[in-house]
Image (cartoon, rainbow, N blue to C red):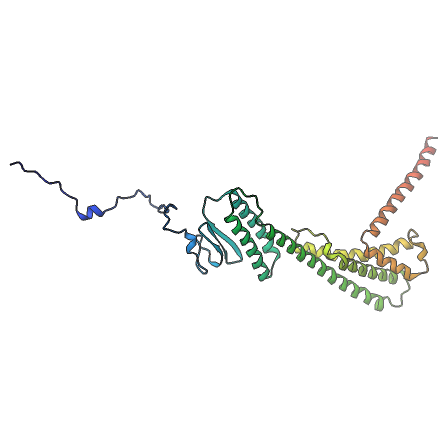
Length: 305
């Protein structure tokens, strides 16, 4: 009788022991593949008050779907976490959002206004997240227009405030000098102070009339905008004084001789119109150059003869 030996079965411990994976020390474990439909993406577990994959605290979740999440973090920052196979339109939209966040943070200081801007940017990114790959839509156009318009408005208001403060200071100082220091003075100083004051008033009225349309550089600093507003008033007062100087020199508005109120009105207009005095000076410079040229020609002829 032939005896047969049965094969030795492995123990239960050997049956359940998983094969060892070759993971080097210091490397993170392999990430779970997205082919497992039962495991949602990591951003689906984000909640307000939690921290995202980068360790930033989530303040508010604006949008959350299987394609990605868009949320606000501390410091008024807009963040997003998305899948890695999105089309080029998504990368264009995120680059534009990063570009627009800089002027929004620098210019808009009101928390409610800034939160509104961030929500508009998040809404544009949400549309980009779910758009078709071949789209050419400008998803952030409304947010861009709002940010640029709000920035220009804020800069124009700073320009106006600087101009008003300057004219109040100038009018106060000049009025004190006219009424106290040079009250009984009949010299030219008294009249120059008056026309400088009227030129400053004309300049501020010009600013009041058209400060909504005053061109300002969108990326200029607040200090530079304030300096521009102050300089507009200073130039108005200076133009009024220059107008009187040209009149006293016999080069301008001789019909106002002996008629001080007409002269003061002209000084006001010169401060109101910032181009009046520069155009007069340019015309005078051309006339002076032509006169010098015409006088130099006879001298040269005499020297040759």
